[in-house]
Length: 258
Image (cartoon, rainbow, N blue to C red):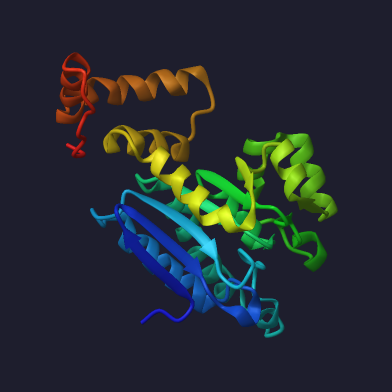
């Protein structure tokens, strides 16, 4: 039974909520393991077409559990923690379903990284993003050194990471760190709407698109090679034939992921 991660699946949308009021949803070992298990289950759940990742208690996630850092960690212990954390990032980036982060309050440290691992980010007014790793003599982790420049550019990412300064919601929207900025009471509704919008079309093409970016599309040749490997196969899917038929018949297509 989950203690720190709540899941609700309704009408194709899974809402995954980090819930540990004592630590502002910090990523303790227990929470990381629970979140990895939840994401792995949803990855293969046909009832789930898209995910929203949120935090309870007024905050998204305060990052690593600093109280747990007081104990001495051996090198194998540290590597095992990173293995579980990396599993979560790879699931978010690699699963064939859109993932949207709904951010309120603080997304700090690894919580910042967790939000940036999502395909879309909706933030509430008052949300604050901070890469606090430099303050505790650590590297940005959970892929933040890659995901942050993808959104804001390398020079701006370096400043955010090295200065450990807080990025408020208005600035986050202006620089492209988040996709939408909404009133707190509209956060979950808008994040859910974005997740449903991303998942509204053919599931196989959405899954392959996510897989392409998870693998890396860094050059024109990368894109053309991926098209060559996959587009001809998509021509043969029932969903493609259904989309063509629906267009000709002037009706909405019904996609089945086959």
